Length: 252
Image 1 (cartoon, rainbow, N blue to C red):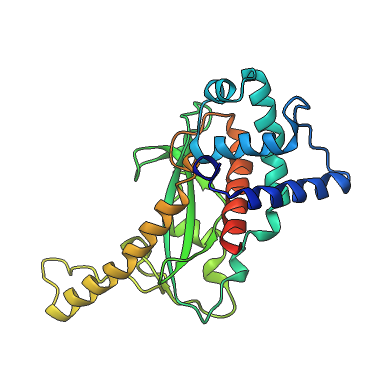
Image 2 (tube, rainbow, N blue to C red; image 1 turned 45 degrees about the vertical axis):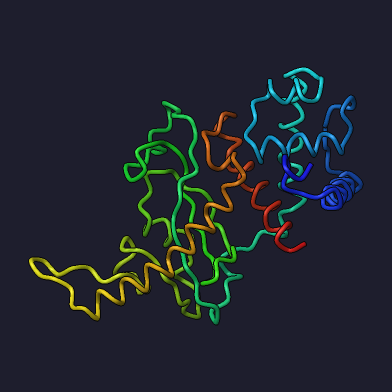
């Protein structure tokens, strides 16, 4: 179970209880009765973790592809709502904790009617999210998704991270120069950096490498790493479900 969902049996049991609590509060969770709640959760988490095709999941669980489709459609929003309180927002970032922030693209199909999804930086379509981590690489925050064409600095300003009352100490790459963050020093036009500045950039890049590992770890949820195949309007909710599960797991 852990190899397919990333969760232990005990953590799955906790999710079952959380979904039951939603149901008891009047939240409709229309999972297929033939599968039951626990198996429906496991199937949906396997889909999120592995980005398996619905046909593959149908074969694995001896059911039909339409049943798998209904399961994912029902359980993804339920998991998102059950775990929503575990997802930090930008206001939760501690000004006393230095951060590394970077952008990453969560890829999806090229919907012809949404041209803003194309990222010239990444040369593919998807949504742009920002990720904040400690200098040691502990995930602290993930932004709401924006269309892939959104410039990194524009996106960060949209998320309000730079508008906090107490100034955050943020390490970032050259794309954020001029925003008051700690960034590498650019080479002057027609000149060279001094040895001191080269050393500064080297040390800063070593710190920034940590965020790449944080992003890679988050993208072990393969639904965030390989093209999203379900309708685009479900993508944001799927991202929320993954983030809720990830932050719940980190807190366990």
